[in-house]
Image (spheres, rainbow, N blue to C red):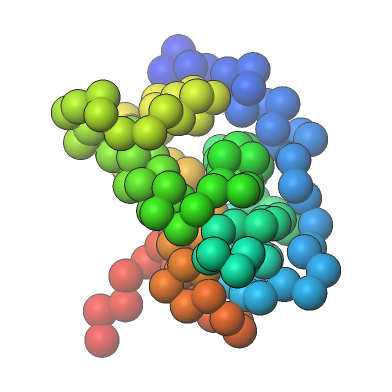
Amino acid sequence: MSVELEELYQQVILDHSRRPRNFGEVADADVQVRGDNPACGDEIHLTAKFGGDGSFQDIKFRGQGCAISLASASLMTMKLKGKSRNEAEQLIESFHNLITGTDSSSSGPKLGDLQVLNGVRKFPQRVKCAMLAWRAAEQALQQPQGQSTVSTEVETD
Ligand code: ZN
């Protein structure tokens, strides 16, 4: 394993991939999103319940895949739980900027432990792994009821 890859698998990532937080399904979920990352084989099933104000009252996930995808999903649920719609949208954008390396300012919301995932910016395929859960959460905000699916592969036709 290269030094760069070793940097990816830091302690926090290993911990969250082995013992994912908020793993399971939200009872009486308002929304279910199934996410796929065919490039790596990662799958996620995100369930969420929204408060009357549109905030993430509860959010859980089930999934299988690489350590990066699981750790990112675990860290994400901890971060988004209890957040308002607006805060959640800002976090999703900040995280995307962090791992794609386009973040040029520090004005966004604090990402805390999620910073450990910034090593993926060097590996485009890994960016898809890290973004999978976040794309599912984004989809949940866009369509806050029922079931939907997302994929990291852009449909071309
Ligand atoms: Zn993956």
